[in-house]
Length: 485
Image (cartoon, rainbow, N blue to C red; front, side, top):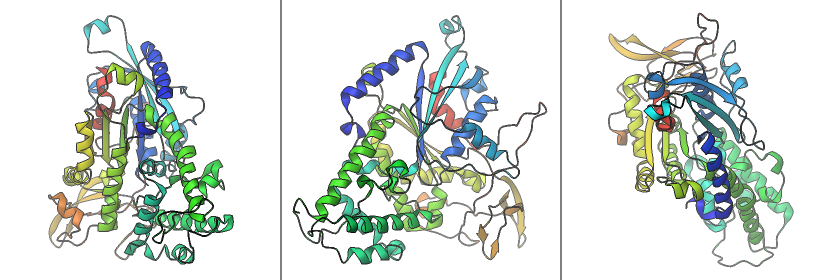
């Protein structure tokens, strides 16, 4: 269900009028960056900003390729109540010795990037250089998983959570929680201690599921995994219950307590976030680690498909008019990016895009019907590997070469993070349906390992050169290219 259903329309209109008035001086675009677990949000923002500021070669970003980008720089962000994205710290991590990936997103943050450019329009060029503010809003994937909660009640959420926890891949992890739940009668009087126990067992189950490197499951509530200053509050102290065939529950029952807290979570945690930040976005990129799902098997792939569908259905999408820009702004362009394309040889990049397009097909059709443009890309904001060849049994195989992260394994080999290695990852099948159903190549099952960042390079001038990337310029062009015409 669209988030706008739950927004305060008057408040949205006042904020939009304020944004519109400020945009008359310098236009701005609010770019949302989010994604599922370990999808590379922090790396994407850092790479995007560094490439633009450093004047990197971006052949498919038209304004840069045409020499019309004159200057790019950071400015203080407009919202003093939102933490600043720590661009400098994340860039320092990537430039370290050895380089390391920045820490994952754990809260909402924001960064304002300003581009000075020459317009393609003659009359604008006579007025001098143009400026565009890009307000980048970064929010955790765990919060993204809360989107579907706005459209379902406590009974439906409980039913779905219990069904998912009984799947074969999760049943063992959920056993301690299930054991306590089996002893609970939801019609019993509300018990604070029991509610706390059930909530902690449910949270332990969520944490263990999310610790799985191949887990991409839709397991809200997201704030259960990163509560911040809400830790211990009643709004975060609830868990699913089995209604056991009951349709109605007394006001003072355990069920009624859990239901009330579930609704409080939506009212005091989820809706304010989307009202104050999410509902004001103009453009959105969703980063998705499709390869991790393929690694996890058919259950993980099905989980990912469900997550993408639920997420896209919650965006307020459509073409913007002057009226909608003032009173009900919509996201009119969405990029779905299959990240870590550098874990595959280039001949599989288009196939990776086809797999993601297949996973997101239904949701994409709905967004496009509303008037929004949806683009699918296979991308690596920072390319951690390079391509090469290796010979096996007299056959030449296309490989990727990089430094596998410490602890990554292939067969019986475990890497220590300090050794460069050539890996044949296999080829994705030309038919995306085959990839989603599970398959093996002629050389065995595909297995994707994670790599550490590449060693940083310095330019002759002494400053650090932007890291290599795959299709980052295409993502930038799709998201903001039309603003720089």
